Image: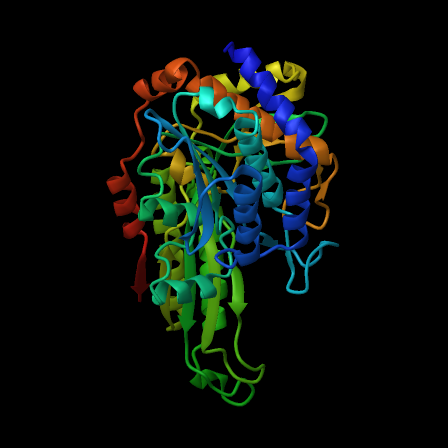
Amino acid sequence: MDRNELKERVIRAIEENKDKIMEAGRKIYKNPEFGYKEIETTKTVKEFFEKELNLEVEDKIAYTGCRARANKDKEGIKIAILGELDGISCKEHCDANSIGASHTCGHNVQIAGMLGAAVGLIKSGVIDELNGKIDFMATPAEEFIELAYRTKLKEEGHIKFFGGKQELIRRGAFDDVDISMMFHVLDTGDKKVLTGPVSNGFIGKEVTFIGKEAHAGSAPYEGINALNAAMLAINNVHAQRETFKESDRVRFHPIITKGGDIVNVVPADVKMESYVRARTISGMIDANMKVNRGLIAGAMAVGAQIEITEIPGYLPILRHDNMEEVLRGNLEYLGLTSNDIIEGGDFTGSFDFGDVSHLMPTLHPMFGGVTGALHTRGYKISDEEYAYLMPAKSLALTVVDLLYDNAKKGKEILENFKPAMTKEEYLKFMESNDKVIKA
């Protein structure tokens, strides 16, 4: 069958099922759950795969999350379409739940888009005409939050890495995947979509400053003030900012999670959390070394001790131009013009999909249909139909192009691709950032 005929069938199937797709997105929006706690969200996705698409589903793929496989008995390359399950903490948002969780991250839109792409490919019957396999993965824990909870899961042996895609890589979920794709939403202003974004990676940190308690009013000289150590440490890092290369886009943004116990006792136990972000892996390593040096010096200055727990964060997201080219053709097929598209985006935030982009060709556009900044009270889905359906159509049509005609285009991309890291190199790097430094 002609490629464009296949694409029209995909589009028609998505349109005919748009109410079901959008309802899934709305249901998830109303019931946000934090990472590695996405029990109900995983159940919603699993039921959609089973009831609407008659797919077998593997759940608990990374403590939570699920995966459905299509064309699993076919030969050829495999493409994974991903969506993220978790919400973010934004208690100020009007739709936040009783614990402050919300989908101001837009992940409910991602899941609906992934389900919509599956609907388009499967209900149309187009999947039978394609030469390759397709997996649909609902992935947990993209937002790097609730570190104490994830530490507990790690200590109990449920997970090793705090990010969902990191954990999936470790568990081998991507071992048989050749190409991966997903999307985020973004306030794109008067544009419709942003293509080819790049981002920072980061190393996570939990820091404890250990001093000596004393009566703060009558005998402060008998104590060692751990809060002073923390404040000096932060200022030490500020003093090094001019040493960070502009091209590395370094970010260090700590919070004090415990500043002491009571006001009339010299603080002896002060805790801090932060990320050290940079655009490249070498930049991450360099900035992290300088940050640690500043933190340790702050403790030394007042005679305190320090314990720095390094946590493997996310890698910078890489842009793969040959994948972008295929997507661009489908955006134009769907009626968008150059006036609707932002070419390239520079993000100093981080995505755990960056880890996947170091291992295989990936695609990660950012679609409009929302207003307001992500993770804030101002976030709103402003054009539901566009936000839910345009990504579904775009990714599904991209899959058609990659797997059409004996997967000619997909094979061409793979033949010209060299991974930035092997899985073994990736895991070794992650292990190198999983450590405790005491001074």
